[in-house]
Amino acid sequence: MNLALWIAQSQVGQNVGNTIKRVWFYLDYKFIKTGNTEVSVISLGLGFFVFALALLASRAISALIERRIAKRQYIDPGIRYTVARLSHYLILALGTLYALKSAFNLDLTSIAVLFTALSVGIGFGLQYLASDIASGFILLFERPIRVGDRVTIGPDEGDVHSINLRTTIVMTNDRISVIVPNSKLVRERVVNWSYGDPRARIAIPISVAPNSDVEVVTRTLLQAAEGVDDILLQPPPKVQFLKFGDSSLDFRLLVWTNKPRAHTQIRSDVNYRIEKLFREAGIEISSPQFDIRLRGGSLSLAPDNELLAKENDLGE
Image (tube, rainbow, N blue to C red; front, side):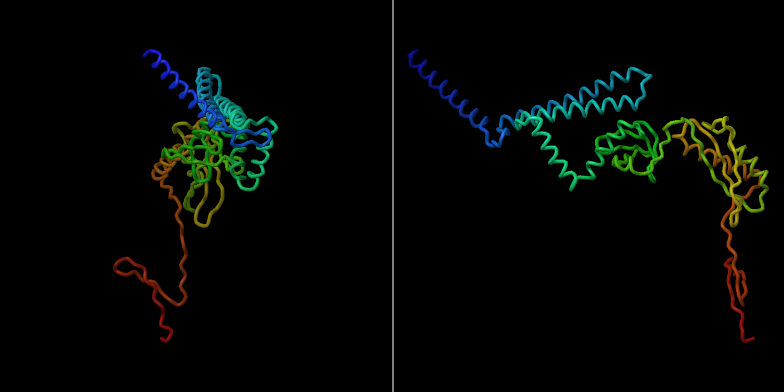
């Protein structure tokens, strides 16, 4: 009885072993063999596993580096972000190369040929994508725009939230995310309120009625800049008389601040002060004026205060 049971178990084990060998044979079967390139289900699975591992490792190491650098307060946040992103891309690129080697048994020469072929395709059909990716590396290395900077891009203004491989995310004051292609930031005009000198000059234009006293207007504008938050005393505020307009005298109040990202609120605070002080001083803000000329007619005021024009009777 024991002998029969042992024989049965041996046969079952042998069948299982044969099944495993058969499955392994099919999984390891090279269904693509071209030169040095050999592809099987196992090699594809190994390549996918290596790529997934590299992706996870790049994210984990990037986050670890950013946390470690964040403890050093003297390091600029933009530099921390740049180092973390570059380490992420480097690990991911190396993992991708090793995944290709594992999946297709490619050597460096074959990988170079593959990327050359891809570059030709990029040149014809994916040139905008390639331009965005190249611009992303320019932004990370040259750093004209950094994470946390206050920027104005066309009609949109906000803080740079992240600089990714192809796009940059800008968060506006309304908490709306504006997705900007990196090539646009490199190619077009961008105002960076946080770049270079932390101070910025803010110009506030104002037009008054033509009969206004220029000296009074100048003193009132300088007074409007006093006591406003975030306006520097040095350099002092300054008023410029720009020109004689068609129906106005055009001035400009210049103030300096060390918080340029708050320029919208500073303009608002100064405008409130200007309106109040102008009202107290009796200074009239200009409004468009038009001259109406009638030939051979007359004007009269209707009961409902509408201005009516009447033509003269030429026959009388």
